[in-house]
Amino acid sequence: MKKNLFIAFVMCALFFVGGTKAVAQEAVALDEDLLLLANTVVDQNLSDPDAANKTFTKLFRKIRRNKENLLAVGKFFKDKNVYSCARLCAEEAYKLAPQDIPVLMFNGEICMMRKDYGAAGQKFDEILFVDSTNVEALRLNARVYKYVNPHVALEMLERLKRVEPDNVAADKEIGDINYNLGDSKAAVKAYNGYFKNTKPADLDIRSMENYTISLFSTKGYQKGRDVLKVVMPLSEKNLVFDRMNFFCAYENYELPEAAEALKYLTEKRYADSLYIYLDYAEAAGFMETQGDMVAAADFLAEGLKRDSSKLAGWKKLVELYQANKNFTAAIPAYRTFLELNKANNRATDTLQLGVIYYNAAQTDSVGKADHVKNGAEMFAAVERQAPKSYLGPLWRARILNVSDEPLDDVKSAYEIVLQRTEGNEKANAERVEAFAYLSFYFLKKDNDAESLRYAEEVLKIDPNHGMAKQIKAVLSK
Image 1 (cartoon, helix red, strand yellow):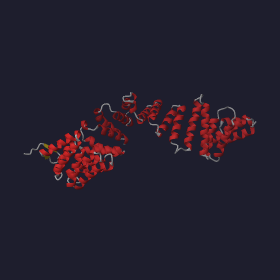
Image 2: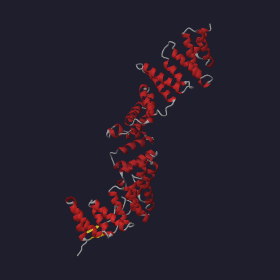
Image 3: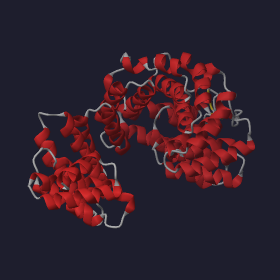
Image 4: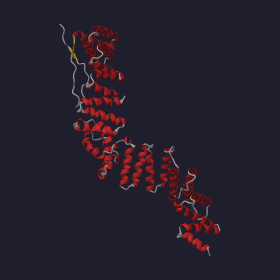
């Protein structure tokens, strides 16, 4: 007499947590002799592979014409991790019933076991050809394509949502995929449904990290703060949550709360290697709102050690250094900016570096000579880059004007300024500056006629110019 000693369920995990209803496939009973042979294969598999192969051949001959037995035995071997036997059962069942949904489902599972996701997806597609609303096939197809072809995965999940609109697990998957694709807006939309309709204790922490990041990215600062109040207690030491808590509080202009939240960084609550550029960049922005430009610069400089490729970060750091009148620190920072931006640099960018050298020369007496030399080179480069602009020679004249004695290189630079501003009334202030220096230059050279001539040019534009009036008064006698 034959007994039912073993029940094999030919089924996958048929539901999302908290989502799709489970749909069990019909239980299939294995006869005693089939179960005995199957167990013998498993027992011999490691100790005597040849004997195991002979036993499986005997078993396979008994079941090869019976779809139900092939599925039951195949599931038995799958559960015992005897992959080769499970695969042969799956393939033989497919030959017998290529449109049978349980057979296709089992073949898809076997393909996933060997990480052949393309073949697995094909089997699930075949199920959907037979039954376009098969929830399990849609779910597994989404899983297969999630990292291989996320757009196909999204299509599967959207189809699943049409069948089961309240499937919050599908919302989670849609959110995850859109987050990985960089579509923060779509991620937020999906996560909204998942968050709203899932008990806090059941929320997936990684997805909630993605959610809060996406809310920040889409400027949903207040919503981010609301979500964080729910999820932070679920994961007490969580750098992403702490980071987003500070970011959202700061960007939402909740400054006292932001100051408290910033302690995740200032108190180094996590390993130093875990902090990223954005941690420090946001901290710098917060410190700037507090009027502490020194701390802002220090934070941003630390952030750029984490990621030196941030072009906007280097430019902002230069601005902070200049606000602090720390021009010597601004020089290497701006040089780094120019190097990163070299494909797009214009004459105005070179001019800006020269101006920083000029300011450094005014404040750093020790390095003044080097600042003057380097700045003059920058302004000369501007003259070559923009041969019609007067700014290069103007600033070159200014930075070289380091003595109370008349200097030929300053004189020649101002003469170029006058050439390039001829007829330009918008540059009258610069022309006055140039005429005034030439008047001074020739006065010191005892060339009174030229000195008076240039003084009169100054007074034509600015009748109240003090030095020009004095020179004219003296030389007109």
